[in-house]
Length: 336
Image (tube, rainbow, N blue to C red; front, side):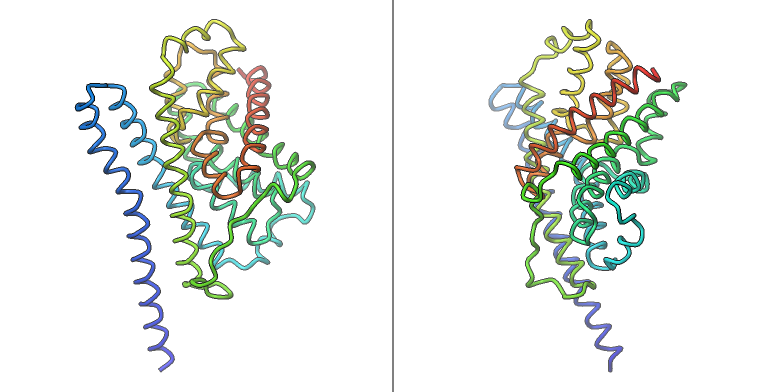
């Protein structure tokens, strides 16, 4: 009798997960479909090629980010539902100063992009991990995972120093930002979302997994769309001829590509190929593009705003951008 109840409960949970997954995925797929189908038609009606370009960039960013966002929300929900809090307290050192570099180095095990790191970091905080350590993981995971490093080596063949430079500069940025938050961060700046108690089972389990997956995916997906729209707007507003003016100055080129990484919102698995195509810029400037992009871009700022609050996102993103640029310059001067 008990086994039958268990089977029935498992089927109910599985069916509910399927329904929520279909509904959540349908919401974003509908937006992407409307953008890809109606966008070109609207451009033809208005006789404005920039409108078609806007829809193309918007759709590309959204389609590129959704799979990794889904990966992150699945990992986040699994952590919240099935991983006991004592696991994290045992794996990470008790002292925050030591937990930050350990969490930063642990980012190498998650083959995802920045869209996946935000919900995972949020789940880690809810499971008792110190915010400084979780934020170090948030920054390092999309920047130093094996997929990104392999993609960088393919984009820059015969230049292992570029791969090493990206690894060192990204990890240094993540660790420094974790330490800075531990020293200067304020608890009132960081707002963790509260999940509704109606669909979550106390103590975790499949029901809590379904509830967490539904909440995180739908919540973060909307902000991914907002960030994609902002990046697409920049692509049609700023002329390419203006960008070429800055290639003659080493310092201006670094700052320009650091800003460009924020607004282009290229996925961390693909940004190395974009950086390699910017052959008119210095190696240090291209390194800055690859270090800043996975840590600070418009869609990531939007995701952080929706997850942790605007007060946190503005302060943390600004400080991260400065530290990432400084790390890129120092590592570029040392290796490149």
